[in-house]
Length: 254
Ligand code: 3Y8
Ligand code: NAP
Image 1 (tube, rainbow, N blue to C red):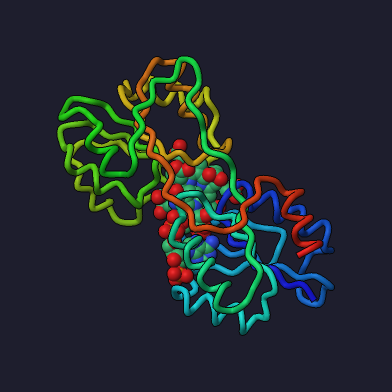
Image 2: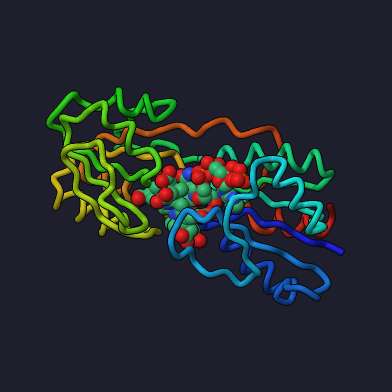
């Protein structure tokens, strides 16, 4: 009996969940082939899924390996975000320990196009160092987990885009910020209007790939603005595919 753990949190994972629910008759308990969709619990109200869901960390590699055994998981598809490198590393280790089949499913990275002004950096510290010392107006479209790094450049004004309204006033180490609360996917027109309204001079982005976060790149190109582009962390060695069809075929044959 196939029982799949789908590590989600991305557009790709949501698309795969729809395909699985259709092909596996809801994939719920009692179905011939079952699937569980997994969120980390990062956001207040994650999008609902057409599969049974679980929310929250597993408790590191040991916790995930124990979960795989306890739930008799036979396959894991890691459709987490390219920057969710800890989850992906844990999945490789735990599936190896528990003898469970693992497949990565992720979108290709963005490549600079004509008209793009990219400053490519290896990590968040590199992104901070690439910014002017002061007086820049920076669109930080990287979520809230890594905002603190920009305290090293307090002379700039930062526009933060967050998924959830910060419950307490964010202990923001940045003296000059504006916050916009919005959940992607985003559109280029909306992002261009936002960047004009805030007189943005620089954009900071992760090379997430996919369509949901791409709007700010299209807007920056139209406005002739530089983008500080953070390269993806190295992902652990594992089999990776880039389409729902390849995942479904792997599940049918693995
Ligand atoms: C919790 C699940 C779907 C998935 C939709 C995609 C598209 C919209 C664009 C900007 C960039 C950013 C951020 C972003 C996008 C999709 C996708 C994507 C970028 C949700 C979601 C969860 C998260 C976690 C959240 C992070 C943050 C990153 C915001 C749900 C909405 C910046 C990544 O507040 C926090 O702590 C947010 C944390 C991890 C990065 C960070 O470091 O802060 N995503 N995003 C998942 C979980 O709990 O397991 O709430 O429904 C999912 C999506 N966000 O189902 O269609 O596929 O990428 N997410 C980035 O790409 O740079 C926003 O603002 O332009
Ligand atoms: P991360 O740093 O790689 O993972 C940190 C810890 O969060 C993991 O060790 C695990 O906790 C838990 N975790 C992560 N993803 C999980 C999942 N899908 N199900 C259950 N637990 C999970 O992850 P992250 O970058 O914070 O991303 C968290 C979630 O947001 C993921 O679902 C990811 O797909 C989504 N997301 C992230 C980004 C981004 O920019 N990072 C963008 C869009 C969406 P334990 O060790 O306790 O098991």
